Every structure is written in structure tokens, then in C-alpha cells.
Image (cartoon, rainbow, N blue to C red; front, side, top):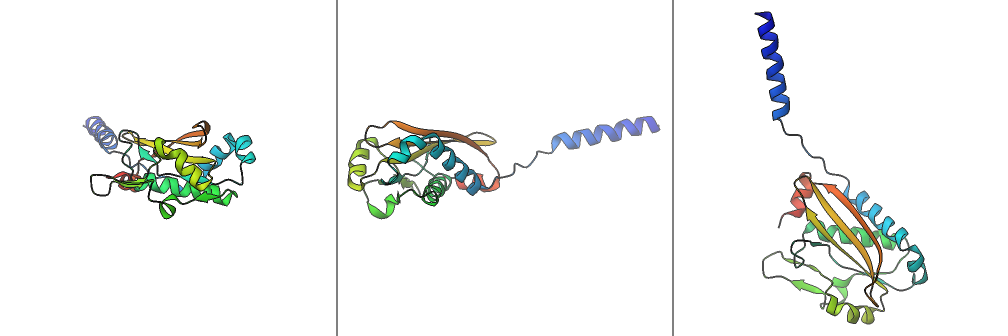
Length: 179
């Protein structure tokens, strides 16, 4: 009987431990954004140092499955990376405060963000004498969101630097991704 109860107890413990889903923890988004910005600047250092006096434009990161849509996460990532560029001594232009030509309002409610459209890129960069633009996309998986950030030279759309990273989809990140 003791043997039977011991096996029953062990079986119950195993069932309960495997049946419970683990909670995914968010990472510090500021730390992750700053790390990505630092990596981008490091990747493009030679080219960016030459143009350090010219501004960088920042556009909201967009959903890779629908590039006309952003989210709180996409806008926050762009804002934080732009902040880091400023902290590193680069001139950053806040597009949404300067011009309406890049601000796109979508068909659905809350479908907005500063999107860099290729046909407008050279006009906007010329208007602001900008050397580069920070753009990014993100794709959501079941447990991770994958972020791709690029610094693109506005003159000819050449990628100066790129950095890919992932964020766990915890409670905060999930809410920021919600459309």
C-alpha cells in the first residue's frame, strides 16, 4: 500500500508540475532598446562618424506582417532608440513634431505611427538635411517578438547598420503589442 501511495504521489506531482504553464517574464525594454541602439551605432560607426553633424530621422517600428500598422511596442522601441542616439551625441529629429508628411493615420482606430515611406524618404531627408533614418520591423511569435532595426542612409537607401534582437512576450510586452 505504501508503495502504491508513493507512486500515486509522485505521479500526481509530475502531472501538476508539467500541467502548469510557466509565466514568461518581460525584460527591461529600455535596456534592450539602448543595447540595440549601441549595436547599430557600432555597426555603422565609420560611416556615422563622418556624418555625425547631420541629423537622424526616427520612424516607428512596424509590424512585419502589416507594415501600415505599428503598436505601442513599435513606437516605444523607436522612441527609446532615438533617445539613445541623442545620448550618444547624434542629432535626432522628432518627425511627428516637425512634419505631417510622414505621419500616416490608418483606416482602423489606433492605427497610427510615423512610417517612413520610400517615395517620401529623399524629400524628407532633404527637407531636414538628414543623413540617415532609423527604421524597424517586428514579428510576434508565441513566446518571443523578433525585432529588426536598421540605419538607412537617406541619400541612396544603403543600409549603414543593422541589428536584430528578440524580446520575451511577457505580460507588458503582450499588452504593448495589442492592436
